[in-house]
Image (cartoon, rainbow, N blue to C red; front, side, top):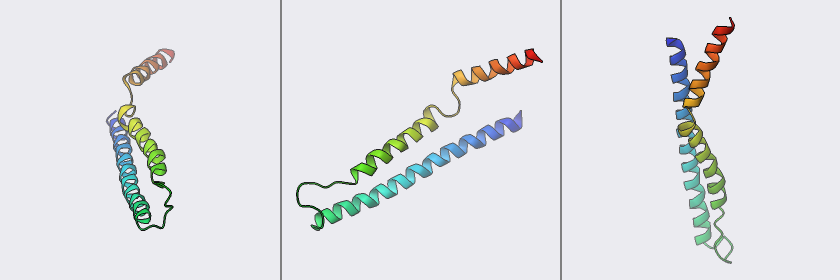
Length: 98
């Protein structure tokens, strides 16, 4: 039983660590491409017909992916109460069937 708790805790820590790595990479890359976009726009290499803020596309789509990863990790991760109850219920049913 203790080993099972350790394995679950280790898995949970890995999930949290993976999310923070994903978030860090997202922030670094978004800062870089935002800088590139704004510098090229300011120096006149970009189209002069209005704002060409192409960095908003990866920011939006990748940002949504990071948000979903965060929801999976912190809101729905770690097992819900329903999931824990269902596991106990199935385990009891398996013990009865023996």
